Length: 228
Image (cartoon, rainbow, N blue to C red; front, side):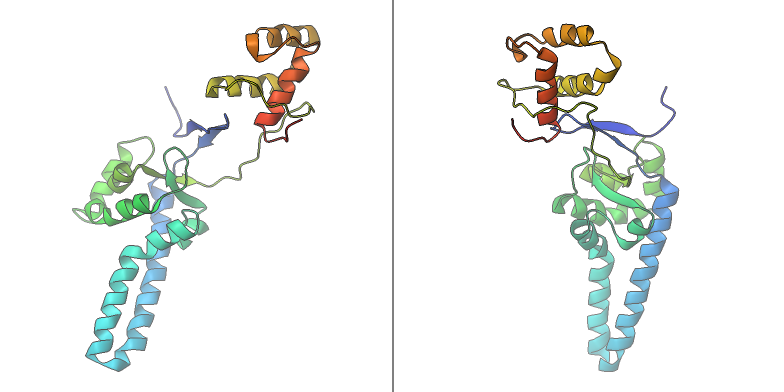
């Protein structure tokens, strides 16, 4: 039984990322900060344009409407999924596979805020967040997005040094992960055991005097090293 709300996604490079969805409280605080900022901008627009009479008030209302609906879309697309409120709370919006949010995704999740707000004060949105492990409101479910805690991701390091070797065959995601794990655990296994395990990879390791070093080279290539 799971006791936390984290989940893992696998990148095309074979790296497993652990993601932490943000719950209702930090999201509420971020929303309040954004609401405060939007309100301040709206008041400023009214004060500046009120001098133009009814025309100015009409322009101000149009600008306030656009601000209310497209403020989050602008920041999510231009600032890596972070509105100012989310940035303060160290949160960001992404798709559930950890890929950056797209224009379509941002528009859908924000235009559906009107549904999440019903019947009042984001009632439906809160119910939706409490009924799924990723705390997705209805707009998130429709856009396939999630609000995540932002953590500094450290690139995986290999405890062995080797020249990068590009494999002659196409590796599946599971094979890439297995090779990276093999390299990461190399310092905990005896050399004879490493050679035995390396030899079990079949055609991936051609006849080599040092099959372990060959796999280390492939692991270095998977980790972003340059080709030997």
